[in-house]
Image (spheres, one colour):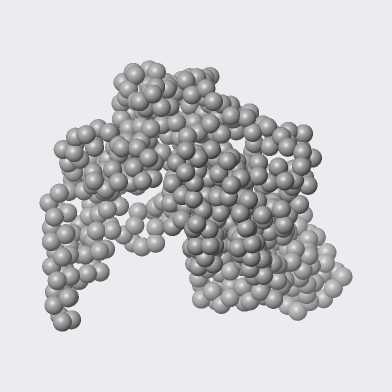
Length: 630
């Protein structure tokens, strides 16, 4: 990852970078502690001013903003745009003060959407929260009826009967408009039985993880079929300890630390993912302080606050973490070390790796590289330290911790700062983008496609070396990475990951350039040493879940992926390919040609002749467009 271009987006922080462009160090000055201390001794007024500017635009709870989002949600709802209305109501809930009437109004409105979507359990959660808060008495009857309808749909007949009796007793005390109509409806609901089988849209099964046949006792989160090794040429790497079959589970590792990815336009984190565990959420519970973070339940919210969010929350309200990018998960990784006294496993040759109870020492031993004049790493880590010093009570708390290795504030700031700088560099070299599956947006998309949701670090998985043609495939379940063999691997053969530099996406020269600039090595993988292997397969489809090759065999219509076992309708892929082919014929339409490329890139392993034809048609189209404008 390029910290400068990928995480520093706004002019003000780029201005800070320019202010410190004179910071240099000699090649022999490669101690991260020394370099951070050297930078921290400089005039930090530019960093302090930047922080002051961010806090001058702090976004806090605001019932007026909450009202606007709720009204926006009402407009979407009236237009039957349920997804956007759901998001707007969630935003309204996030901005509302937790004890305000506006909070309860947004909850009630969101419950109407979730009921329409068939998310009855989520609907009940919102209704119960709404009724426990300051929801106006004159509006409660409609919500109480909706609760009865939910209980009926969920076939919770005992709860339904009790609830209906309670509501009916209310009519003995008060008279409301259309009372007879409501009484009749409640009686019908109480006495009715739902015939159709309710299908839970989201159950624990969708989060079910595969299991090892035998787990490795010396290599945390790994199969007994692999082991960690070290030599001077390859450094730490992973080899097959036994023969591995295609599809075998090799790693199952929960993220040591992760930072959610911010949406570029809004600078928000997704309200559709739990901020703490990355589960899908329809009815997120907001942070009680900031407006950006939502959780799947109160347990996740409380755990997040205890582990890290109490120190992050002010930064969320001021967009600091958005601008600092990878420093965000680096700070979270640093917090994990507080209980470990920041130990480090320096013995690279040790074939034991990882500890499920305390993995910080192993994370802290991961490789990193200090680039020449790498000022952005030290600026970002210094911003984190100054933010913690001035705008939170982190350091008074930190100095009282039993494992704190320093005893005064001055030493604590530089100690914390150098570790965050180190973790930034470690994440640059070892992190993974956590991607989840989401619904396609058009008729041409298959049901799922991947979207990035977080940047995470998985120490055991990161031990694998890179190949532009890996022999493993990965996917994610919430914050856990699942790694399976993409092909048969013989005993003592190396197990390779791909660091995002894939032979199917770029040529050898470009791949070598990125390997050297991003990861500081020259790639000598099988595909780089023998470029002819790049064209060994074409006219095949790609599994949309794991990227494994699916043969286009005319004798079959359905195919179960050999790697991830996902069932694929081959006819659907053929239809997508055929429709894309029709677009290829429209040589005068730039948009059609680009759409053709996009669809085939998603589902079809590249075919040399098709690629040549696409490029020829596209270039001819561009030439005609250029000629017509002269």
